[in-house]
Image 1 (cartoon, rainbow, N blue to C red):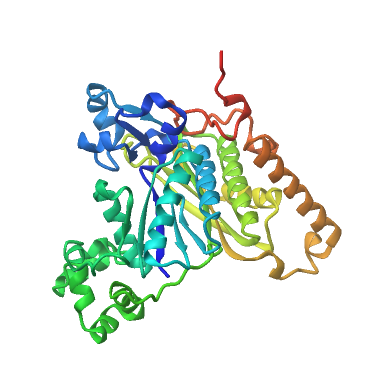
Image 2 (image 1 turned 135 degrees about the horizontal axis):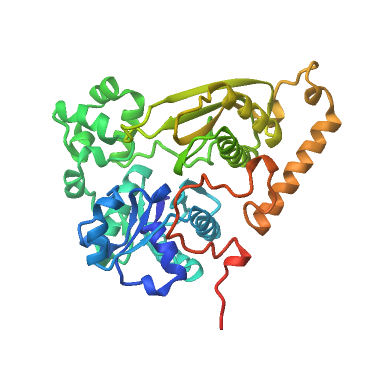
Length: 423
């Protein structure tokens, strides 16, 4: 029973190309929040040597000389396209684990040859239904499947599919895989392993299990077993997040408390929607403010504070009110703030929160029910008609604090007013 990992190729760029054929074949880069750094590149842009994380202002001349299409990030579009890809994948199996916005693990009760055929069919279907190209790696374990997926991208002759199940055991490939590239290892742990002479995946696979457990604990031992073809990491449903964060860099320095209040309210609203989607409530909310550390001509400040709620809640007005109290306690005039954010902590399942006899909302079931129905209605309208269709007045109307998105494409799939017009 092989594991499959499906990874969307250059996902953000692929989403843009799915709706704008003029970008196909042309070097394309997508920038981070506030049009800061490169976070996605087309193959043509990679060939030009544009690195991941490149500051846009430093590469402006290269962009101009190479006729590079430079786009602002369009996360609304990317999230919706990710949902469509994952929905397509779910039609092939019930055993699906969404790993990230552009990756998912699948498990199929098929032989190796049947799984390869299914992977090719899956790849063609995703491309046809969503316009997104994917690579598929197959292996007896999730760790090897990650390596197989990387190999599928490196060898175009494979047609986007690479299978370790039907291949000889990949000693040569493991030897050429740096230890930091192993799923679950990373740079910090990889540096420690290199000091012990373990420089690649093959060396880790061949190491003594007792040494691995002593040096990397049971988690590292599972990774080693996975490299040996013994499955130790099963599929799991997406776990509920333990914290939820929403933060943004502003398009310009924000000096006034009123503007910060509107921004923080917007952040809380965004985080509260995520909270309700996983059926959780938060008992603590933290707010932070930061100035621009690169503006040495201005006074600097980085501050945060938190407030504990008397009753864990997912009701946006209550969370905004608490966040505003925290904001007012840490705000100081005379500073130009570049970034702010909120962090929801102490999360618990909504049905298991401890009620309070001394809190009006906690002691009034009818009021809790009204709050729940109101939030469900607001979320439904915003999901159906586009985010921001219904919002609280405290979130502001103008929102001049929002980051720069001078090159953002249309939100084709979620905003009626941004649909392409045929003339």
